[in-house]
Length: 334
Image (tube, rainbow, N blue to C red; front, side):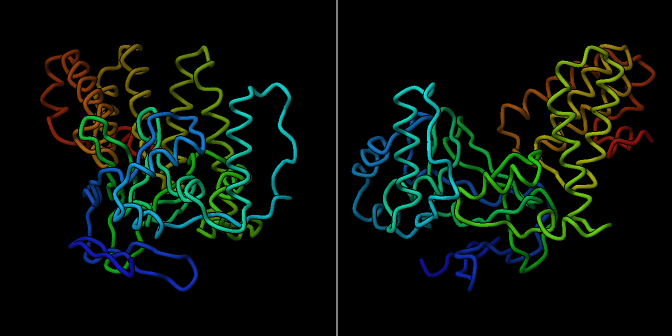
């Protein structure tokens, strides 16, 4: 695959990062960039080498050939990984870990190493997509990928406005991971991230240094949110999370989910006006990241309708059918 092109983006080989995807035209956030069926799919989460090889052998010769053009994070230094597996790990899981470690540290690419490097979560399993695999990673991505089971397709949406020639990136890991967790996760893909959230982290006032603190706080709040007994404290934490994500440039479904939590807490407190405004932001963000066919988008729409029905009649018109006017925007009440 020397290059691939659509009206929205082109795939080109770069000097230092393999293939990468670039915008061909100005693209508005919420635009569907790609809708792709799997090149190969495994219908189980904890797959073994045998599962991948069996699925590969069922591909046509032309699809097998295309599969071998994809990247492989093999040839890694084994000393960078633990040299023992805990005794309590079940035998089947131990076998899976050993197989993947062997594929990752082997001198040549393999069917398994290609799958591990390019696989995306896919309902209760994983799949590899020929074009989606070409999108590189950033911890501050401008696009988002998600599997739509109803359509049987991997969907990639622009989550920020993109300029001509701008690289289009996805996040391969949890956006709330701190930098050490992200580096460990991304090591399995065979690279060190050099995005703005991962560089200059010791330089006072730099984005990287501030990002390190913000992501640590996001993880701290996220880990303690569900066990927090006070609704007022949960609301305060939710608003802080929205503000942190806005400053971090994270426009992922995590933002939509947090808005929906704020909406539900506000509704429980009887503040239906704030509930409706926050639910609108949730729906807006789900539409941008996941599209109208996503179950999460549909559920957010149902929540918005339910909250709107509970508004005092004189506030229904003020709330309006369109997007929110600023209440809870970026964590700050208008």
